[in-house]
Length: 391
Image 1 (spheres, rainbow, N blue to C red):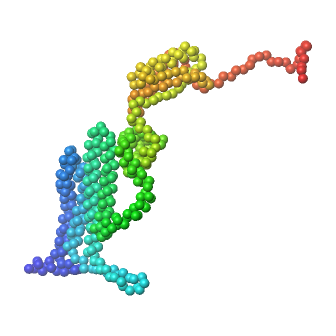
Image 2 (cartoon, rainbow, N blue to C red):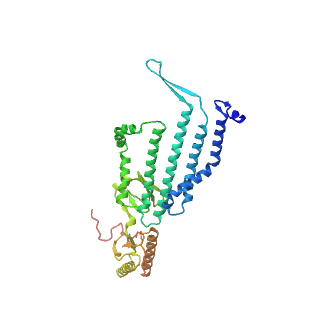
């Protein structure tokens, strides 16, 4: 009886029982939110366990732990605050601009404001959880794509991840408008029909780049990891997004090229070539005799054709006469397309060419100038004997 009277005592519009429930729910929520969030994460993981086919539970828990904690925190605060009554009301007066008298009175309670605020926060936390689940699904798909030889799925998974996350964000935005701000979403979407045309015209380039990304996935002119060259930019494709493609250049910088430019311009996929061409010329001295030149050319040609990492159509020939050298041109194709391997083969052949030139008692030419002086005897200024001078 006494306990009942004690809990029924009123302070600031609420009895002690309401304050006790408020404190108990808040304390339990704060103490056990981490444990409950881990349990909920592991329960949710059971829905995706067959899909993952690998031990990804730690990744799933780490992704969902924070958003579930936030969801439990907001839910706990909302439940605890709802145990209290909020007698305070605020009346909003709507005045007429013409007359100046009260046209409409709108009572707004503190409880209604709290409900709207926590509904807003709880909906945000729910969609945060959904976005993290999309991150986990893309993580598993990327793991599966990494063990396959097809590179298309490595490129498609990040794109689909961004696409679905964008869709979820739009759904979350209209959900907040409908449930929190009580906006008629269908009417709003219908009203945007005409405005959408203007927006589409303003975002013409963005839409073209988005369509360009779909074209890239359908035509597959390249995939992530390919070495490409477009608009003078050469590098490795790292990511294909909604609007642009990221390329890691050979100078190790990051180039961002709009997707429209990737499909409209001349794109060279150098990863699809089966050979790398090498073409250069070098000069030997003019003192080299013609038989020696022929021998040098033939030895270079034979070495290139017999090399295991070059094609059979390599060639070398006496190209012509330079200002200070006899020029020999060399053309061959390296079958190893990896850049470091290509440089190693090129270096090996260069050293062999130097060896061939030196073994044939010739030398490499460099720019020189020859000064020829006239050593004829001087002519006397005065005429001698019968010499005459004509004017």
